[in-house]
Length: 309
Image 1 (tube, rainbow, N blue to C red):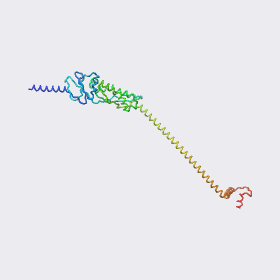
Image 2 (image 1 turned 30 degrees about the horizontal axis):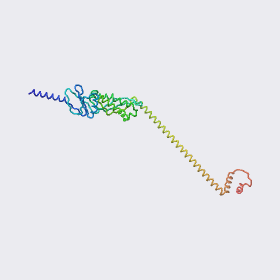
Image 3 (image 1 turned 45 degrees about the vertical axis):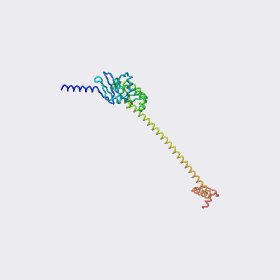
Image 4 (image 1 turned 135 degrees about the vertical axis):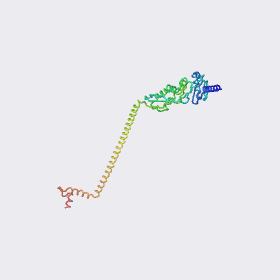
């Protein structure tokens, strides 16, 4: 009886081991290959990638590999077949920092990123194997494309993401075709996430900026001086015009006043000529004080002197 129990326990253990060795689970965010004696016999992929994977297997002479599109629980031959799983979510690649020389001969340090997926796990298993290997592929295949695109841009264009990305996108279809064929990878997004000036260029840039600021300052000062001189010249001209106008008006007023005085004086003379003569003679008398002169007895001047006597 005791031996029977032991046998049952052994059978149960063996059964559990066989069951666990003959089943496996593929999650929705995974792809996989099933190998038998080191050769890939089956691949489990995402349904949306079926056409791409099917064509890639044909192009790589792997038509005999069975394609399974369903995820979840699957069975395999225990101890003969083994399963290798890979993440099918978007993976992120970040490059090393690289110095580029722009079209207008200016240097810039850049770092780029890319989002990619494992589409064909068969080709990925044969060529790349791991995520670190995939990043190495990006270094060798994708990064040079970005560098070459950057070298065709002038410095200012490099800071306009849409221009840089349009240059990269032009080559992305061709690049993805090669990545898929050679490594089972597919890039969905690529761009530059860091742009910095090289350390040895910072001093030169600061010097250029200082000179540019100084040049702009001199220009503004010159424009200010020019505006001041124009304003001063206008003010001086207006002042001279006002003074000349005032002098002219004063001269006209004086002339009019003199003319009016002469007119009044003339009218006064015309009204009483004898009185005028009398005034003139009185002035003469005043000026003759303490003076000896000889006059004819019939001189009009003596009329008033004799009359006074």
